[in-house]
Amino acid sequence: MENSEGKESSFKPILMRYHDIVHKIEVDAKTVLLKEGEYARKLYFIERGCLRLWFCSKGKEVTVQFFFENERVASAESFFGNCASLFTLETLEPSVLYYMTRKDFETILEDPDCSKGLIKVLTQRFMYYAALHRSFINNTPKERYLELIKTQPRIIQRVPQHYIASYLGITPVSLSRIRKRI
Image (cartoon, rainbow, N blue to C red; front, side, top):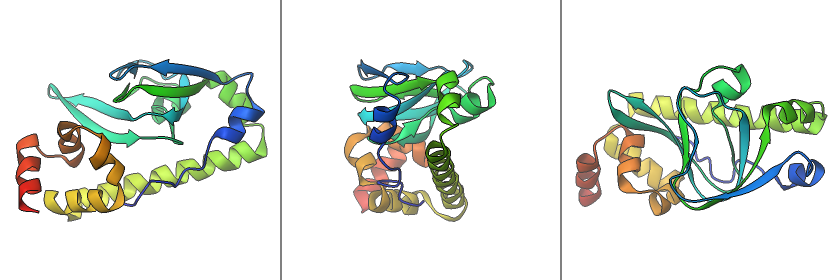
């Protein structure tokens, strides 16, 4: 998995340029921003906090990705494809977020700088998912955990262990065993 920390540039210029269509909210930990099956109508920019994207499989939550300060997040397939979301998006920490609606997002896409920025973000996200997919095929759970420590230490520092285990595709008990061995 490639390190995604620091990859996405600050969203402050967008906020300043489009302050009239960007809205600020402060939410508690464990706030669900979007439920699986709903339509994503907002794109979020994280000023402070940690968010988790997940889905339910056979009655269990499966974590797909974590998002932190200066990152943008939406259920991309829903937001861009105008379809039901495959994922739930929730905060893990008290968070300060900015958001814009899909309609307002379409307006700023007319700005060439914003369009270029979107292409960059989407390309980075695609590369991240490709690396994650490759890691699940090639690496053992222990190797995935060691890579996570190396490339994304803030996940280790800020995310509860049971969510990390889900993200790695293992049980919390297996993660505990791996942590004891290293």
